[in-house]
Structure formats: structure tokens, C-alpha cells
Image (cartoon, rainbow, N blue to C red):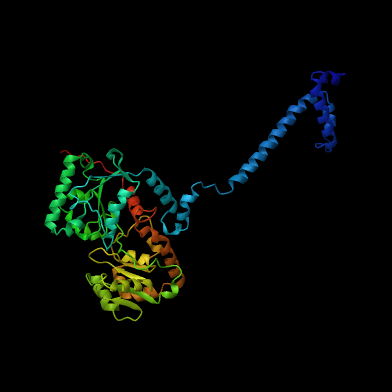
Length: 440
């Protein structure tokens, strides 16, 4: 009677569902064990209505436990990378970066945000470099002037700009026949015109400004404007410390001798590299004099103590030697040289011989992964050092050299991760400024 009164509390559909549940559970008798009443006994108990909520709670607990186990297994797999198409070209060369992940993240942010304002041209024949020929060992300067106007970084609104580009071309001034004194005066006059015509220089004394020059003359031509030298970012090819180069402020511009007479080398051309090391050039520094004096007659080192005339057939001979050598010697000299970039292009592992030299993209690329860096005093044991490098290590250096070649290549219009974009990334890293206080 008590059981019937309990069932009368439910509707007809509920009683039918309860009966089917009772029959199913009684058949399985899942919870029956010694000293434990069977499920049918529980269902026949006068208070079986309390068992249904407990069963629901049990089902919920099992469900949540299952979801937890599934989630843990899911998290054990690598996360989906929706940026994979954009970073695929970085993954293959991640070992040549100091931090590939940091570079990928910052580089993408630079592409999205970085803006540069170019001051309107002064006298086009004097200031702005409109290159007709992107050739020669100062082609890097011409390419940058052209690329900045072809790129996404250019803005016509100075209020959106992170940096301001001063379009001075001392190389072109030199081509007009100006001497150092006249060039210094021209630079002074142009910077003064920017000061009085625009408010942007005065805000920071030029600390958020930069100029580009690949010719060593350009470095000397700016000496008449101290703030331009000390405050502004100098993007220069000559980046030795004895030229007032400030590594954390200035940027090393890769100097490239264009055009190239062969396609890129390296990787699968090991059998063609029969010369241990090669160098040709003028003895215009103490280091080069020592290099020629010690190793000029060596049979394994190809040392040519002369200036190669790249305007004649000597250029082809020079490039062929780069293409057939394992190592290419890059000794420090008084002026900039395209020798490092040439070595990289032709797959000849560069041997940097300098005590103080800021290599292009030095804070981005790990040069120890694709070059050999020596002190100037190592010239006396140069051959022993190069011969002691295991073949396996040389192959790794050569293969990594192939990975960085695109970073030293100039294009028009510019291409992602090429030399122009790498220089822009260096400028992006230097966009944070000290706001100088000054009364005019």
C-alpha cells in the first residue's frame, strides 16, 4: 500500500518510464555485491524516490570526469598555429636567429604598425637620391631611397610617424663635385631648414630622425651637425666603432656590390670549393698588410694583394673565386666593403677579421652560425684555424649561410624579409626615444 501511494505521486508517463528503468537496472544489477542490497531491492524500498536524484548526480559526475579526461588529452597535443603560413619561412631558418620566436612576433607587429615620414625633397639634384642605376658598391643606399617610397611603411601624415627620414644623399653631393667643406655646409643648411619649417626635429633634437649613407664620405659630411651625429639614427655601411658608430643607436647597412654575375651559391656546391680561403684587395690597413705579407705565397690560401678592377673582366674572375672557395676572408679596413655580402651571396663562408665591428643585423642573426669571427691577431694562425674546422661544422655553416641569403638581398619593390625590411626592423627596434628638453 505504501508503494502504491508513492507511485500515485507520479503521472502515468512517469510511472511507465520508472518501470522500464527498474526492469533494466534489475537485469544488470550493477551495484550488487556481498553485503550490499541489489538494485531491485533499492527500487522496492519505500524511499526509492530518493535514489533517482542520486543516480542523476552519479551520471553527471561520470560525464564531467569523462570531459575532464578528454580535455587533458586534447591539451597534450601542440596548439593550432593559425599564423603558420606567415611563419613557415622562418621555421626553416630558426637556428640562425638569436630568438626566432621574438623576431617573428616583433616583425609581424612592425609590418602592421611601423610608419615613417619622409621629409619633402630639398633640391633634387643635391639632397634626394633618385637612383637611375641601382648598381655599384653603394647600391644599398640607392635601393633604400627607392624602397622606402614603395613600401607600406611610408606615411604622408607626420602625426602617425614613429620615425622621420631625412633624404640626404651625400653620395650624390659627391657626384656633383662638392668637397667636404661644401658638403658639410649643405647638410647644415638643410637641417636648419627642417628645424624652422617643421616642429618635429625640435621635439627630440633629432632623436626620432634617421638618415642613410653607404659612402664613407656621408659620415664625414654630417660632422657639422652634432645632433645629427649624436642623436639621430645613422644607417651606414661603415660600422666600425672608430667611426663614431654607436651600436645601440645606429644601424649597419649591408653593403652589396651589384649586379651579381652568378646565381646564389652554397648548399649543394661543396665539390666545387677546392680553395681553402680567398681574399683580394688593397693593403689599406695594417691588418691587410700583415695578411698579404704572411700568406701571399701560400698554396692553400688564395691571397691577391691588389685592387680588383670590377669594371673590367676582373669582376667575373673575382666572383668566380668567391664561388669556388670554402672561406672568404673579410679583414677590417678603413672604408666599407661589399666583401661580406658578396661572400654570403656566393655561399663562401665569411671569415670576419676585426676587433670592433658591428655586423649587419647583429642583434637579430647569430653570425656564429654562418660565419667565422676572428680577432685581428689571429691572422698569424689563420691557416691552422681554418684547417681545424671539421667538415661537418663547415657544412653546417654553409647550409646556414643559404638560409640568411635572402636577408642580404635588395629588391624593387621590396620583398618580405629582404635587406630593406631587415633594416626597417632594426629601425623599428630603435623607435623608443628619449625626449630631450631644450629651449629654442
